[in-house]
Picture: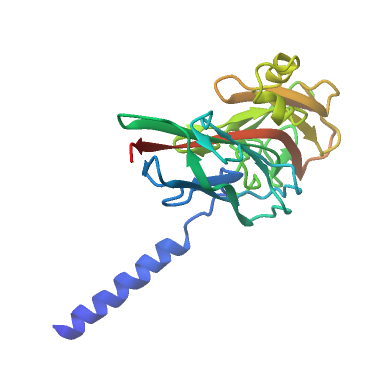
Length: 292
């Protein structure tokens, strides 16, 4: 009986390992991920105590961010705390997997004169440029053939580089003598269960935080838009320059359509496009201030 049980255990172990080995690895759906460091700030702080505010952040996507291009804004400080920096930038190149710690306050003072406990909510907003590289196989033909098939979804688990904006669907259709592509661009970035905001890459992060700036409305009009660049030749798309332009997102989704005149020969080839954008995320934490 012991031999049978041992053999059964070995078989189950191999089966489990086999299943795990077959799992598809999907690229991350985030760029920069942030979190407040534990006890910095502490959850409860007396008015005679000092306050530390540290944030850990990491580039979880596949796009590098140059020094000074990622902006971080601490919101909610007001006149409640003294000695707090409310804006920081990355001090080094943020390559894929790079981690860093942001120091907004070390030994900050509580400025409030309170009698009862006071709840202070701090929000941290990030704003940074990012790119998604999309590559997938398509069939250039008038109909399904031994070389390739027009039917079916062309986006796979590895078609997109890691990042918050993705091409989540691409399908083909033949209409007359043209190959038609229909693709869905989607905002998939989530932080603290909330989807982030996407802007054109030309958007100014600093102005987007300042509603009193005379150019604020102009920058806000760049929201929910993505710059698209088609790298595969021979296609004309619903973009301002056929292969380069912007796509607007509604309910976090936008539709890209492209067409190509078909020739006599059939082939399977790579379709590549680049998505360029600014991305804005936020996290928050709450401090309870109590009288000393």
